[in-house]
Length: 303
Ligand code: 13P
Ligand code: SF4
Image 1 (cartoon, rainbow, N blue to C red):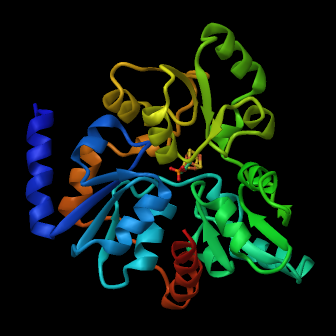
Image 2: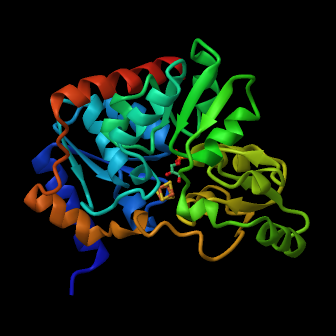
């Protein structure tokens, strides 16, 4: 039987051989976060991938995140640790659909959430993440903005700006299923807890929150807060670091189904296999990559 320690040693060996850096999202399994060189939210991961000095980037997350790394790193090999890890929200729109919306609203600029394909990014003026959405939207000239694909993030941004946001009806299956009644029940169970939610939650849930944050913003918020207990409206994986970094504070999920099955597909065994066989290499047609890069670069310049 192979122990976790042996798997970790094998990953370290493979990393050296591939001259690789391992980047992981905050929702990854604890043991995967432990072997990563850097763990962060989508914005931090995009930034970090633009700065790495490695031949190979092994990405533990979902496909659009590894694609963003590949968009920014034409000279490096980007491996998605689990080839089937996708984001169902990102798949709710494709280039053809976005072109139809652009045709319908020709005066509008397009802001795409980073949870989107390279093809959708290539059709967009600028990209954003949950950490910088308001700033990005404010940076766009003109008043009308088509926001794709997350209706909830788009709606949240619309409450923070005077711009006219045209919402596309996509959503995250994990955050959208959190209902206000569940939040109210959690608040009854933990009356002293602060409610911190991700902007992918429904507007009715966001209305009840004390803070609305990206995953890494949540980590900073709970650390700096004078409060001791928190109800968390995002994916379960974030609680690993929250508890590690704040051993004296308490964290509760709103419901026990705040799990992104795609994020959880990556296991240590999967990481080893992908690195051993150099599997799941992300490739993006150069014409699309260059256009998508403009949208990502503009975002990085704004935030
Ligand atoms: P963050 O950028 O806030 O980490 O969110 C990514 C994501 O997929 C949320 O569901
Ligand atoms: Fe996509 Fe939602 Fe999973 Fe994030 S949590 S990767 S938005 S399905």
